[in-house]
Length: 449
Image 1 (cartoon, rainbow, N blue to C red):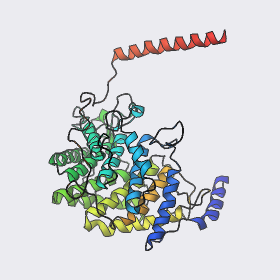
Image 2: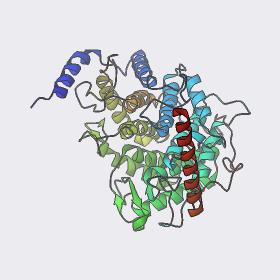
Image 3: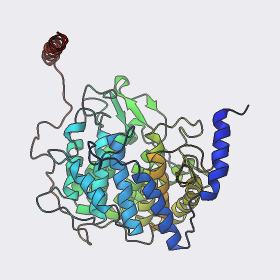
């Protein structure tokens, strides 16, 4: 049976396939033009520079965490394409959203953001440091400082009272998911620690990486295979973290993969090389004929807005792994190059003729569109240049960003853990709500009279 939607989709594919983004990886101008078109489409979703909107935020329905991911993507675009078109906007966003304590817990997100949300802004900050992005003036928080502040505040939330450790998904007790310990929060803490270890040369970050990795392995969030390693979604504290949610997501795999590569590059400890290769072997489940796909949701076409961006971060982590570890390059660059070509032919939709789709094995545009689709296509395209530019800098080989080991703890060191609502607080809040409600009702009656 041919539905009206499928008929429209087929018509749109036929009429837009000829407008697909042209990509020839043997021609630098072709890649420059293709990436510029996709980056322009990505920035179409940015409304933070419009009147009444919030600097750094993208249009609904994209959450704050994905904005952090998007700015990390645009940093990759700037670095790999050597294109500074959006640098002022990137800089403004990364500085505006730092929050009062310069730890990426801004007031407008302080009651809703989770550990993973904060982490993706921290990852953007450490990326800025590693790539020597324009340093802020001395009176503004520096990129390394911001990454260290995110790490410190996350590490201070390490919850040893349940499941022998681990980070909860949520920071605040009132948010759904507070009793869940997920791989993206813990994997991001591991990942940031690994990058800080390499950038600063500080062994304490290596120790933290070990601590997080061992906990994830012990709970089964990291599979115990000797040839292949996979990362599962999370565990619940109600069952003492024994019930593993088995979903595998590209960004979780990438966080662990690249984190291990950073640690091997810095420590030269053989175990991190072995683990990098194990995660790389496991990453094959996310490729169909070397074309990336989100295996847990894409086949059934039920990926939500968040999940449709996961491939973008995976591309970023694949690229940096190839930079840091030569033995991974053949496998990774085949995946990246093949997926980039697939993405280009899938970026053939919309009124502009180069809106990107979700399923890159589809012949042309599949009818899906959004910030995540643009980010994923752009990251795979620009990371085809991963081996053409220097790997991430460190403080000893050209990295100029500065920080502090105490970052994020100077202002409110006692206000770092999850907030708890006492019975008295709830009662007080109820009274206040009642008083406000009565006041509003009285004002409304007065206006009517």
